[in-house]
Image 1 (cartoon, helix red, strand yellow):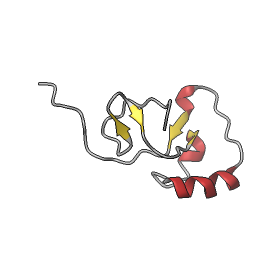
Image 2 (cartoon, rainbow, N blue to C red):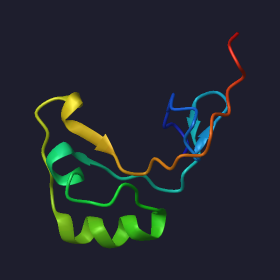
Image 3 (cartoon, rainbow, N blue to C red):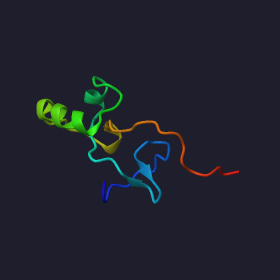
Length: 79
């Protein structure tokens, strides 16, 4: 996803340069995220967003990326 930086190098959508290569991402507040499955793919994002409405957050720590999919570490061993 052009312009979206992500440092979670064990995510399936992580690419060198800390780029997110997902077609779409879903970020919501923690309260809503706790009610949803662990991850959403691009097709699911469209359907869930149209029904969930707005989900305000008080701080950045109240938010959650629901697109993360474990993909194994792609970074080199540090030691």
